[in-house]
Length: 143
Image (cartoon, rainbow, N blue to C red; front, side):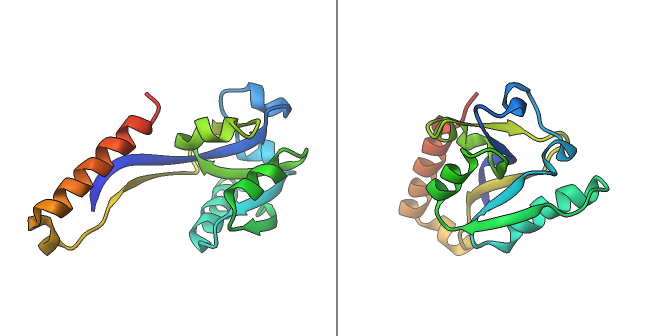
């Protein structure tokens, strides 16, 4: 893998949520919330449940699993809902009237990048494409 960025999952809340004014969110602060999982990927659910278990808390209530990011954001606008999402999507998340805050301690911090066979790295067109993607990704990230 050629790493282009690091992705950190945080907590998405309605901008009107009392926790939204803070700088970070702890697991015990959102235990009473209804969880929305974006993705059909079981890893996302494992990250979220593992986050609570690591802190000696019961597994969260996951009430909705959706393959639509927009639907997930719409649900989180309502009181009592929360979702995990990459902090790097904060600009897009605020477009929905929501905030994404880092979790304290971290939920996940993962490398993101381009996967390709080592034999493909010798093709100029492929390496140029990956270079362009990396430049674009880095330009989109905050800070």
